[in-house]
Length: 207
Ligand code: SAM
Image (cartoon, rainbow, N blue to C red; front, side, top):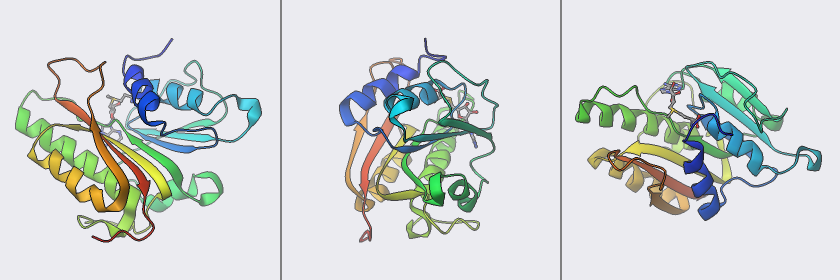
């Protein structure tokens, strides 16, 4: 079994978009309790066929190993808002970055709609900035100059729907071959969460 119901969201996204393939190197931001780690590892195919890598990052420690996870799955306890991109790159296979970045990060919900949406946008924006690096038009901070996502790679970001979340969709568009929105069936009807799926990072995006 999966450690959380959220697994079924990634299962559906995988079915429709096949972001993770055998051999993919996956960065899973906000990975605890680890259900997406399970789905990501399964999507890499059998261990004996070789290849593939998953790094999960979360503020919370993941009780490893969740079922279906094997030696290709690694975890790191850290705050993604302050984690430098070069550190993530140093942890990637051959220091070449990742071919898939997933962000299921969300703030602990306060119930105040506008506050939750703003925090969710901050986390989503951080995932986007880490992925594309200094090419980001909203790039702000620290030493993260190199994008962590490989050219041709895919980026998935969970957001709470708001005007600002739509803006991330607009900002990301020129960077990718294709970008779409998806509301998984496993999402509770009352929830405003929605996933931005960006496929095929372009080498030299024209912004
Ligand atoms: N995808 C996970 C799974 O399937 O098990 C569930 C993720 S849960 C909905 C959201 C996670 O985002 C929480 O575990 C939370 O600790 C994490 N998170 C929120 N802000 C974070 C941050 N700044 N850095 C790292 N993780 C963060």
